[in-house]
Length: 243
Image (cartoon, rainbow, N blue to C red; front, side, top):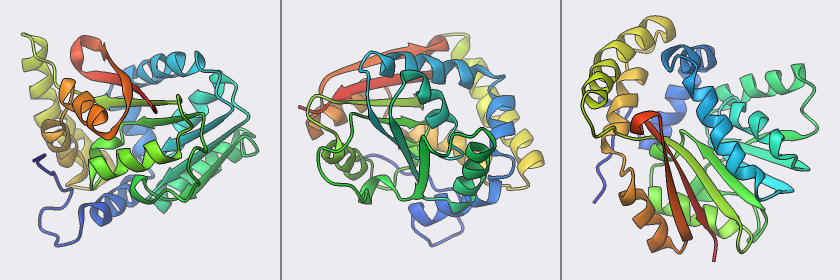
């Protein structure tokens, strides 16, 4: 059984409620910290994931755990007709809507509150579903991935970008020191949330990455699942298809 990390260990709330609270708390600093703490590499990772999306020429795309819509905006490079982004944090969505309005992209991308386990869409709706650094926050990973499967059209891809755990010296050791010590300290100082950037490395540690994740996709019914390792295994792109 997959272990679970919680943002606020002192709280009796569900993981979903805690994740929502956490992202509401850090929404004003989220974009800055994302790019700063990853040294901007997260931007390159997103572009690589979208380069895979482009091959499918999707017309209607769903971005799950969209946050402030960075991944949805990047997905416009695949030239879809419409993107819908869903997230459980209203704080993150509010920042995303401002961003889209400023960039005059609010006709191409719409944001709404929702989560992977209860997507308010019909079966076989989307030409592709994308998720960037969000699946490890799902309260019930299999339920979320199954619901995504439901709304995909037959043959359509799920493309997931997520942190993974490097396995080889010295990247593994450097990564562990940075993730477990430097990142939480900087994140706490900037975001003023003492738990959010402690939760991040904890959530990565317990997440079933690599072949463990693709085995879950296989179990649910996704076909031709592939893994693309990025930056010495610090993150990975996973691609699976609805049968």
